[in-house]
Length: 212
Image (cartoon, rainbow, N blue to C red; front, side, top):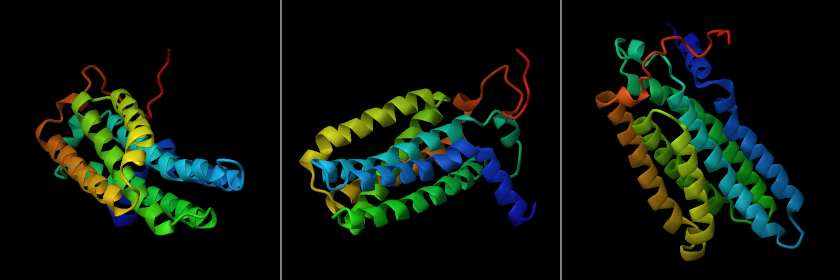
């Protein structure tokens, strides 16, 4: 398979909803933040929307991409290691998340926020939440627990961490390092213990038509 069809194939296997979710969430947050600026509490609300929406959406998309593979047994027989296949699909999500980060950073500059600090916080939070979502999905085989964990972590950050730790590198760097470590260990774990993602009795692909 040449490079272009391979890239298109991996993007299709991600699923269009998961692939578009980070960018759509960023656009929605950017629009809402820009509209609310100048009102009472508008700057705080804009800050919350800009730094919170994209990381949650990206983490949920990562969990969805990992959990939606219904032919894992086939992948385990291919010469390409399955963790590498997952990493390729996550790279697509990373691309859309990066586009969303660019949009939100530009909007932050128009809402009296530091775009550099905003970009750092988006990077750190996105990596941390995505790493947690991937880790739990890899261990349970389903995205539902990961979705609950992502929401809980996002609320914890908003209510506790944001008030206790100043924004900028002090908050973003540890989150980014921990998130990158979780993503790496999750991918390595798929090579050793992929069994939670194997669902017995389900041998058809996600695009198959089923009759009730």
